[in-house]
Image (tube, rainbow, N blue to C red; front, side):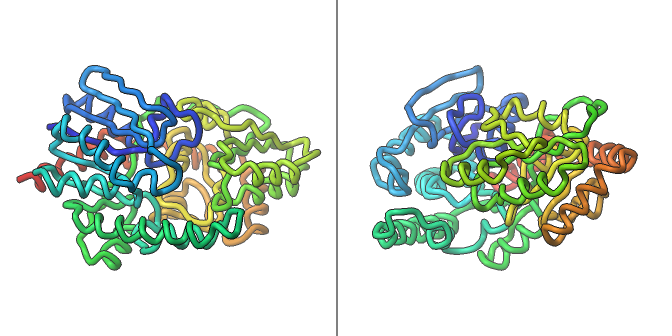
Length: 382
């Protein structure tokens, strides 16, 4: 079978921000190739055009011709990208999240016999007017550009919504996402989670303990909360490590100004995705402060490396509370109390680490995820 996976960046070649969707496409592509499938990964987020073939895997970077959403929605880029797909002749076109690439996938399958598989990538994936709401929430200067940005966002939302109706398979990461997709889109959705290759069982953690925060430094991830957590727990003896790319330079400057003078806090900047495993291997706790999430790759990585997760409000599919691999708290004060409690109880961390790794083996193995995906695609093809 021939698979075309639409993504933003290839994590081995990423110059900047790596999203969870790109990580999942990276692992899906590798597992499909391992199973003998022919795979094309069409990348839209790199700064330059390039191509590479590695056995059954073909990588094609096709950057937008101009900045903004319109760079990918304009007919010229869509035609060029469709030509790449036509040359490959995929049986399956797979894409994650509401992106301009959704339009490309729908456009291609309309003219071919390929199956269009679309997967949600966050709890808000099903909601309409994604880009309009995003523009209204996080406005950028100059202010006089807002009407133009809103118009561009509205066009993008309408085109993507229309394209999404042409998907043959709708996939969700969690039960909540599946229910939301079915409620909003009036279509059946299937639960196919996210996966990673399984590492060896986690080794013992260093002392003193390290508390890790790993995400892109954006308003939605609320990095200021982690800085305030480190400040509140200066006497705990733990190190507080923040890592992640910072696409918003002004936000990063504000975060670092808040952390100025904190002896137990360190920001290490953007870390290549393939090197983040070592951060989790050294961490004793992982803190998740996002406003909302789907099934974040960082939560999966924490389980893979036996790191308990303390989350502010997010508990995808009840993983943390049901399986005892961490704790969900309601507010910032509870976050401080929870982290302090976990830091003081090494035995509790050890028991949670064992449960986390067992959960990863049972639920987050990429071989299992791809097996589910291939079964659904075979049914759709026939």
